[in-house]
Length: 114
Image (cartoon, rainbow, N blue to C red; front, side, top):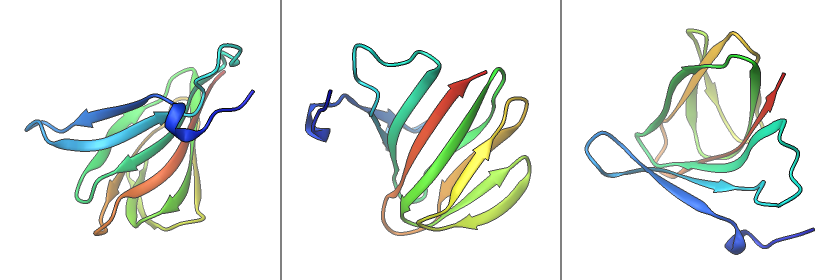
């Protein structure tokens, strides 16, 4: 099975004042996808925007950063991220990421249930 990125579904997320915040392209848009991989997406966060802090329960999430510059919050510990970095948040822990650059912060996100 294969698809071109143009064939995949992309959602636009808005911030609290109704402006575009991020784009999420579902890379798991296949009929026979394993349901344990709850999310497999290409995420593009606009400059100055962020993925809000959230906890994971019964699942873990990994990010692989492709382009841009950001601050990653790993349970209250902030670290500057750059392309080529990988993060992982296991069940019971939380994270967020903010775009601090002038271009989109682009990464792949994968959530797998326990």
